[in-house]
Length: 414
Image (cartoon, rainbow, N blue to C red; front, top):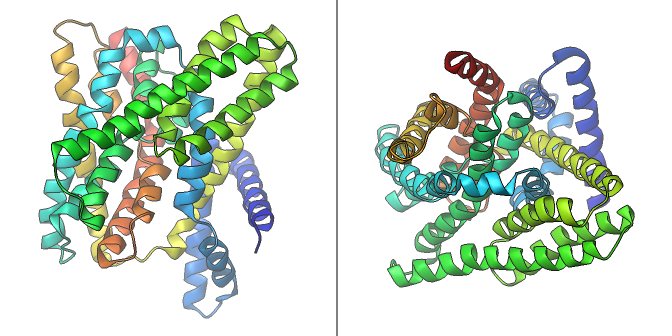
């Protein structure tokens, strides 16, 4: 099946599930699509147990042709991050730079080791034991909050602007840091790379710092082009080329495409919006990228729901996933609580900021994509199954309740 046919089927099913959700279920669109696709997947699995295998065979054949890791990490993610970064206020982000920076770096590393250490002993108890380095690899891919899931929830959560900047800013940057941590541990576990400060520092500088600098350069070039054009069609095309061409070039240079497009998005969304666009262009640009964001989100959450049909589960996987979901939340609480508590000595915070940052740290498609990038092995089967369970629980439980927590916190602090 060719790419056009696969895309057509996924878009059609996404539209159908979005319609069902809008008319009858009334959940937030992306969460509703994922929930319906989960139910749809379970029904096909159950029907196959009674001999009706046509549906699940066709669905599995379709999913086998979709490389989830490639589709998200090297396709959709750059467009989704750019769309999110365009709406983050740069001055407010710089004002919260210490919080965002610590959460996106120290927080991710802290959570990686907490989850890695405890998951090692838990999986041993459940007869799912995998080497410690693979447990750290699992910790690195499950620790970052997913910017796609987080930004989608923030649209309806009703958080204050200050709190929204902290959550959105962290989620936009921490996946870039987490990918670097993942690559370091992946190299040690799979490729036998040396464990040295020099190697880790070089990889971090190449991926993270290189990505940030490259994003600044391409964002500045695009900004200069926008200043010299007053035609919204051309300007939308420039931003589209900025993301597609920029992320492709970043991948070719082995630097972080996510960090590059986030930096470029902040430049265009702030300086470009203020200095280089007419009101008409701003309106069309926002409409275009909002549509891109919604369409890609719909397809992504559909794929997350359908992946259950090609993921191997056992009872022990389910038990491990449920326990580790609580562990991941606990690690998130510690990773958020330590830096925020220290920063409270010099900065005022929302009284319930640690609870909201903890509960609002959703896991999503990035964790699944990183898990699926691990080469086929017994370790991969365990990590993929447990990651999938944690991601689904995170999106359904945290995603559907964060709005109530934010509302409660607002009443308490008023």
